[in-house]
Length: 240
Image (cartoon, rainbow, N blue to C red; front, side):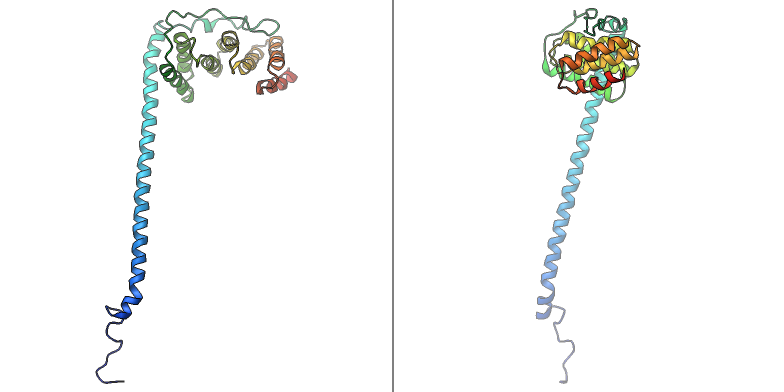
């Protein structure tokens, strides 16, 4: 070994040619990966922020819907909105002996407003939110008020059907039967008619009126043979 030389050679692993060839490229690759990772973390943080904003907005809209109907409930309880009294009548007359629904007592429509699809949808959605919240008492009041205010709305047929559902959930069979019967009477071409008749038959069965229930089920099968309601009616008819 030559005197005065050192080992390892100068520049090896520091700033010489060896270091440049062996360390420069990996350092650059690591930097790129770090930048990509940092960018991904920023994007994830932005997405989380957007999701949080959307959740807050949904919560705000739900709260507004409930607040709208607090005022509506006060007017209903004070008698400003109609629809509650007819729902307490007997279920007799909801269907005749042959199962054909007959018109219930006429609902008051003195406060009906001109059509406004945007406003109607807000009221309907707010009422439906009460179903999701399982507040069936308020939902029943809300749908009754909606039908009183917008009897000719494009949402009226659905509202009439859901009025029956919420009354059924409350255990008010009389009101449920009248609401379901009203669907086919007031909205005969609506898509909810087969379902409402099937539900009406269920109400009559629960009330012990098996003959009426049987007649309504036969009507569903005969008039709406391709519907899911007809399939369910066929099943229930075999059980009566």
